[in-house]
Image (cartoon, rainbow, N blue to C red):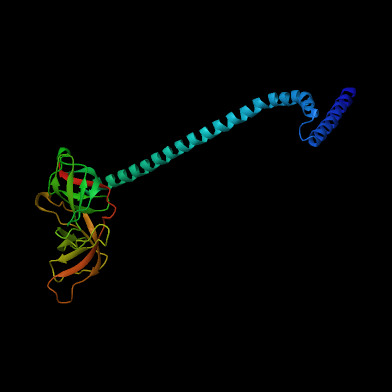
Length: 271
């Protein structure tokens, strides 16, 4: 109790002395001897307080710096994880497409060589370039498809790449049959670019065949399976364009394959 009172008394005396010294120093515009006296009296107290506070201030600064570095490191790791997740999702989609490719071309005499589109478009034709070629067993006049259906045929081959003419190209003609009826016809490309409307034109060779929207088409197949193997889905009839009494039936067809988003393709080659 006595120690507490004594401490309190000392603090009161120091406060009174400090106020007196400040008043004197202020009156003499800082030139009073009180200024030096105050420095002698309170200087040790100030230095002691600074000595006590410095370690905590340094620790706080170090902690703040470490926290900033840790946040930056975590942000970098987060970005890397996001990139890995995107790659994994893309790989899953590619694998799903490949499974469908193998299902579409599951004949005993064919196998599918998977490839990825690495370039698209030509000056006057609808073509893409893939990253597989003769070293992978690919040759010209072979069917190209994806998980949705027919894409086109191989027109040129190099060692590690190949050019694919798309079914939408104006010079492309594919023999087809109407699923369910077996009626034979051909679809031709409209020459539309990969960024515009992608329709095919159908011509049936029978004038009496029943043709209506919603019917689906598959490839009829070429001799020896080149350039087209049989049974690959092509598209769906969207609009009948032939007039009554015409010698042939015509229609517009929406292809199953999305030519504006080609990624993983499969080239059907002989075993």
